Image 1 (cartoon, rainbow, N blue to C red):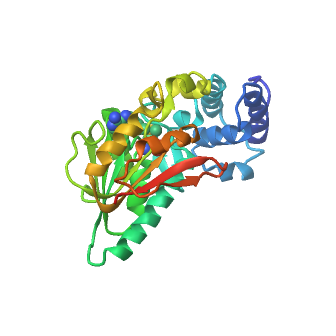
Image 2 (cartoon, rainbow, N blue to C red; image 1 turned 90 degrees about the vertical axis):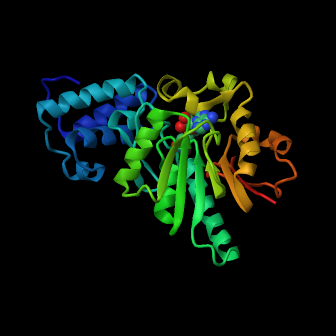
Length: 293
Ligand SMILES: C[S@@+](CC[C@H](N)C(=O)[O-])C[C@H]1O[C@@H](n2cnc3c(N)ncnc32)[C@H](O)[C@@H]1O
């Protein structure tokens, strides 16, 4: 970007999209728009009616710095400090995983199963739901906002992640009565039984991790991604512990990697009904639903 030229919104966007493309960004135009909207303090849509406007020097300088960091691999969500998930806005920091679109299936599945439980449990007013490995709180908060009469227990081993999740719960107007946050290694510090347990646990193996995109490895928390040498370590323990924390007929719904699908039968004992595996939009096995017998 030459500082002496006239840089309108339109020109900044096309130059930046080209620049980020050369640096390997997968959605360069979108990235450019999100970053420019952020520094201008407007919505992305507002850029379209401002193509011929020339941002002031402070805005251009802030934009230039962000574009440089983006070109170095920093994810846009960490640069702007938020990410959309389930059509809701969530604050994110380097302490939490950036919510992924495929994880929205976990919310959909939990809401569907909650409806089924309501039909079969006439008379039970409130559903108790736990989210294990809540991170930014996106899954727990999306469920709490879309399901009447439920109570969420959002669990994470990371205290800094829980601070972000609490902030998100406040932003989305959830009370302490609707959502509780617990610092715990899986269920170690959690009492009680739940009707539904949801989880997007770490499920990447150490060898897969080495091949993940640089922007993931260099910025996202390892603890949120890597389970161990096999990838199954956290899930195996979750399956064992979840059974003791589920009400009869309760559901455990979790996200996992298509790479782990073949080994699932090894970890599902006869305390569960046959697993139901749902695919994501790319047609890959992604969400497992287990019902306790
Ligand atoms: C893949 S991230 C999911 C975050 C969020 N639920 C989402 O879907 O975007 C996994 C989360 O599990 C947490 N975690 C990892 N090991 C854990 C454990 N043993 N007990 C509780 N939480 C754990 C991590 O800190 C991280 O926040």
